[in-house]
Amino acid sequence: MNTDAMIEVREAIRMNPKLHRQALWVTSRSCGTSYCIAGWRMHLDGLTLENLADRETSPAEYARARFGLTGEEAEVLFYEMDSQVALERLDEYIERSKNA
Image 1 (cartoon, rainbow, N blue to C red):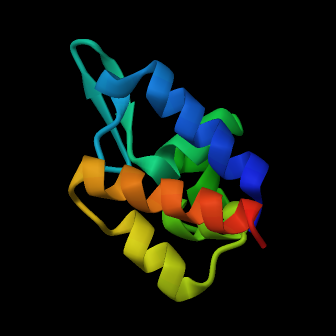
Image 2 (cartoon, rainbow, N blue to C red):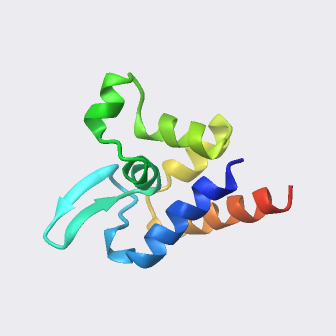
């Protein structure tokens, strides 16, 4: 697992909790653009949904590769709609990666 890539997303969400919305990859709101965990990874890497479409990949597949997750780990993390539960899972993956 890529601990640094996961920590960078976790810190971005910690600094901008109102801009984390797990139910959508990316969404514009009056307070700014919100991202899910995979959307944050893509945003921090300077990518947009259009960039990923050009690469023929999805935000989940892109973030799975960047985080170094298995397909099952990615599914559990990225398709969790409850933002708090998803953050708890991300924290678990970070801890597991640190202890590996």
